[in-house]
Image: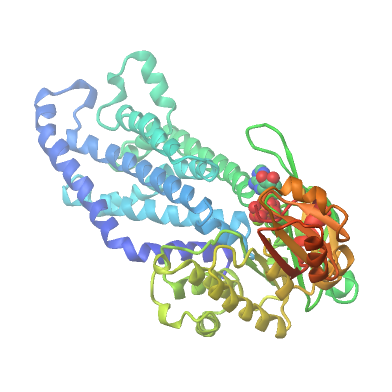
Length: 256
Length: 318
Ligand SMILES: Nc1ncnc2c1ncn2[C@@H]1O[C@H](COP(=O)(O)OP(=O)(O)OP(=O)(O)O)[C@@H](O)[C@H]1O
Ligand SMILES: [Mg+2]
């Protein structure tokens, strides 16, 4: 078995004990959000005929946005707390680093597991979206790629960061001051055309906006190929740069 | 990759080995290991003895190929840790100072997961896990969470785990620190068995009795340097008299003045006075003849603790 797969298996072994709980959360979350905001609040929005939505029902607008935001959330959570814990003495990483495993193998295996988690919770989210009748199953599957890309664009750089973090409070800080604002202002709940002009340009540059735009294009169709290429290129570049940086910081942290 | 390239039976060779820790956020660099030379031969039990901060763990981590060398040369099993880290680690067993057991997993699972990291076949790992549980006397605990184990049991599990790849060299960083005497003796007995089976042991300790019991040869480290090396007996014979007379007084200063001429050498500790003499009873009689009345007097054989005191003027365990 390739060394990175050994690390992947380790995380899967652990996941096997808790998978039921995570599946319930991955289904319940979109169910509640789409019911309350999409169907409930959406009635009000649709009655208002907002020009910003260009005729799209609010539920159809919200679903892909929430999906991308959920992918970010899964990526962020899986890439921070478990990595931070594993890198400490008594965690998994120092134990694995004493074996033939190299730090990059440990990173690779864990990264693979994070990808698996992002994809799995994304697919469960999509099942709920299909149940709400927003899109058909075939169309929904098209969104799996954008979901994975969005999650990994956050996960890869954050794993490289979290492995070297010394205090857990920093992780909470990231969540409060970076993830939450992104969640709110990246075109998830409302189109960024509603934002003041200067804020709009800021929002366009965030990875979540890129992920939301890509996912929405895949989900609703009618995406512009040029724009899609930009979103994909942006997210791929962020993922690749993240992996490159994480390889360095894993090696620095585990072989010191 | 042969062991032969390093000379007959030399498994580990360090020449001018150094390690400098540079804090990440800037700040002062510490030279934890300041140029040490040593050789460990196949089948030997080799010890590092020294006080806190001497550089023992740092040395062990370099040998374990998890910490890059800052200077000098190091060869383990004839290979350079810098270029052959995974190949070296495949043949080492490592018991770090702090347990790195997985508290989320059961005792048996810890062995299975660790074995997988070495790329061993699943059936093989299962079989070895069963043997190792027996070796570590943890058969009853096999399916308990690691959380539920005592400190001694965890240490035994860590040692069992480090043997899953049948290592040529076993690195033990303070294997028995924090254990009660009974648990320590059980561990020593296990380590002795491994040695009989031909495993080369490299261990650190700041317990004299442990070094005397387990080590064929040892080096005494202080401030990142080797201050003495040899067999436990050779070190004692070379640096100390055969016996020591330990005296406690009401007024140590006054008493010390009156018996200054006694013994080969004396060492003043805050709470007692040590008189080094080949015959301790003789020395005690001489003390009585001077009219000085110690509160307590104890004659014992010299040990490695005394070697360290002689060399550095400090005690090992404070
Ligand atoms: N990761 C690190 N970063 C910075 N300094 C370090 C690091 N590890 C060890 N040191 C420093 O290096 C020196 C040697 O430490 P080391 O852990 O090797 O000592 P030791 O002999 O194992 O001591 P002990 O008996 O307490 O375990 C100490 O001064 C320690 O503070
Ligand atoms: Mg130490």
